[in-house]
Length: 182
Ligand SMILES: [Mg+2]
Image 1 (cartoon, rainbow, N blue to C red):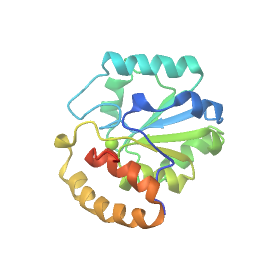
Image 2 (image 1 turned 60 degrees about the vertical axis):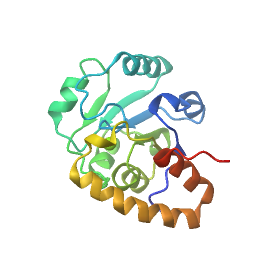
Image 3 (image 1 turned 90 degrees about the vertical axis):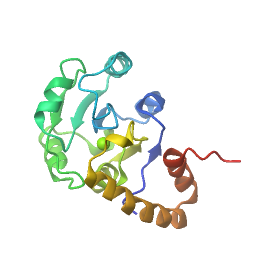
Image 4 (image 1 turned 90 degrees about the horizontal axis):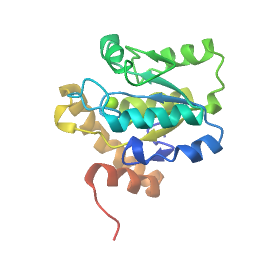
């Protein structure tokens, strides 16, 4: 099932990066919109800059992978230091990311992708055969109409995931609805 993330965390600040490092991860591919920043936020805030610094100090290489255009990335990377980026990535198509990773000679086992959408981010990372982290969208009210359409498809996919991997389904549904296990 290509929509199931390897890990689920509420925000990027909750991700256990120490564990990921211990598992051999060295390359992080971050989605931007509603994963690192809401659509409204044009530049990184203090907490994000601190996370950026922590990850660089740990020895991670950070890449931004966005379906958005390069302008957005240019503004962000003034304060959020990265090793590179892929704009207009065309997620869920994995080809642009695949070419990028191959060109740089990266081992796919050392890469992890982080995003807020199963239909674009998680599907792309799974197609790429790298581990993935699903986080909760920062601000859903600012989503584009096509993202909202995806959300309806998402609900159907979640029902299928429930039949395949109930534990993962519960983690995912908690993100979406903030339902706590009794
Ligand atoms: Mg996003």
